[in-house]
Length: 309
Image 1 (tube, rainbow, N blue to C red):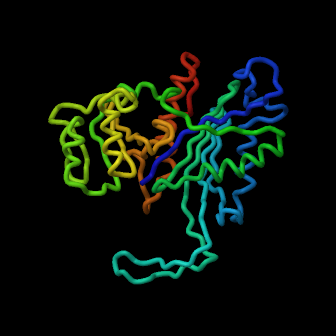
Image 2 (cartoon, helix red, strand yellow):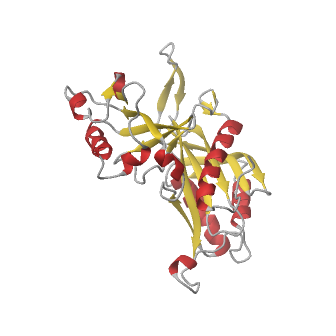
Image 3 (cartoon, rainbow, N blue to C red):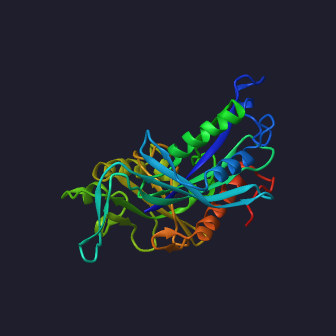
């Protein structure tokens, strides 16, 4: 239900001299501005009353802002809700209506957002939390993009951070199971997915005892049987996930044709505590920092670029 998507934030200026890949600003030297402090300023300014975005019928507010100027990290809740339709809120235990949501009411979902802006680089890492596949990247980029452009007269980019740029170690992690969600039952699917192993209830595909289902990289190789099997079972469900294990730790990645960029979404792990269904702030912050350090080790080898843990 809970997942995070990593993004690479960059500022491109075509007027800069040099090759195209040299036209990205060092993010702590965008003219007189520093992306770290621009993010801090933007979030701080929007941490009081809820604000309305009439075009998309959304409301938003930031809260619980935490900054670390030493490691240049920013964490916060991005509280977002939608309005515009009347609905009933029922009690699932009694089946009775507890609350009638009016057209001008908005249900607020807390989304964790995280930014790591190391000094001296032309890129930074951002993580956006999603719940049941609903994220906040589009809204955040629109709001912060306008703020950024007003301050700098430039455009901020926010592109998915895919597996070929980071987390390479996980590509050789052993796949322990493959899950097909939103499965539509058919009689012969077991035969079509047998190249992966045997399937269990609700189409959780597991290998025979003491075996694996290949490496994570196998599911991203278009010429592999694993990739072909994912294409087949993708016909029967909306989302496919693979659970991989390395050094006793597990991560769940979304794979298949419905993910625009391979490994651009990581399911929140069991080590993140949930309180009333919402990730605990410190728990998800620590979990994301560990992932960021994995990215940084690949992106900046030998430079000891790390978060505060």
